[in-house]
Amino acid sequence: MISQYQESLLLPARTFQSGPMDTTYEDVLEHIDSGILLFDEEGVLTFVNKQMYGILELGRHSLLGCTLTHLISHIQLSRFKKKLVLRSYREMVVKGKPSYEFVDEYGRYWRASLCSGEQMKGCYLFTLKEISDFKLIEQTAYQNDSLAMLGRLSASIAHEIRNPLTAIRGFIQLLHPHLHLLGKEEYAKIILAEIDRANDIIHEFLTSSKPSVPQVSMIPVSALLKEVVLLTESEALMKGCQINLQVLQEDLFISGDTKQMKQVVLNMIRNAMEAIAERADDSMGKIEVGARKEGTEVRIFISDNGKGMDICTLDRLFNPFFTTKENGTGLGLSVSDRIIKNHGGCISVSSRLNEGTRFVISLPLIH
Image (cartoon, rainbow, N blue to C red; front, side, top):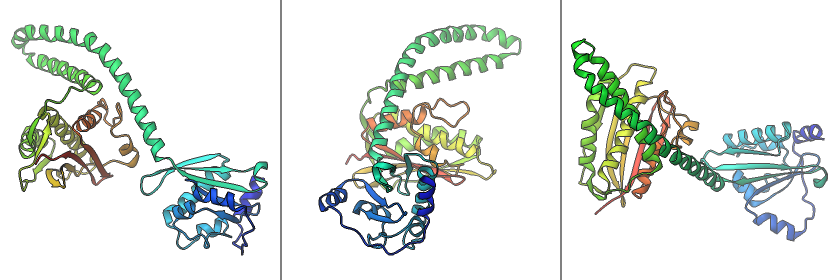
């Protein structure tokens, strides 16, 4: 049956005369929130509701009587939608899957479904429904589960690891003069640096699971960015990067915790340095830092000309534990996102492979 239908779908278009349909059922199908395509046993499109021809951005009369071949070759159907139609056909008709999920050119999530068999009397019913809200709920639930697990994990490891690390650090400091006499002072520095790094990782776990309540004060954005750039300039030069701080045209102020806001911007600048270091070429790395006023918000931006990210990485960028770094914890951006949301703002990101990445932090402006 499937093979016969596959052949019939590819038949050339023919003139189609719409048969009588119960107007009650037709009205119901017209007003549901899913797009509908109904093909008869010969592979000819016999019914399409307004949701579907709105999604395809085609007129109803130009669709009725079409076969799949005619639909794909429709001059007004965008190239992206043609690819999606073909992919849906391959997944559901050729491979026999009951449904297929995809993301459109606007970043919306959709689920296509196929209903056939005896209950359809030889016809094939394709439905298309937007599931962006369900995906958002699913991602939020996943993130909440991850953060709950992170809270339990961080609480259990904090005391178990920090106490012996403190003892080791103390003994190394006591041994420091003896190592100096032996000419092995560098060993002590390495050990202390690694202990401090382990403590920083534990701190990231604790911060991401139980972020502290912001100590709110009025923060001048210009002073905040100048201080962060000053802290990272020398590190950037060592990594072959140049940080350019754009001068603000006016004094802009936000309300929040200065320490937490500094942590967010520092994290993004350091991420930019690492992205530049991973590029294939040896050209000079550039990081642009600045801010501007847009309506009632302040937009702080950090952009780089690093290696960039693909769509899959962007989709998971703020998930706890997700990292593309060999020694990363996957918590830096997750913590940053939580801090900005606690301040009533949001973080957006745009990126292209081999071109660079741009982060924008939007926060309420204090007048």
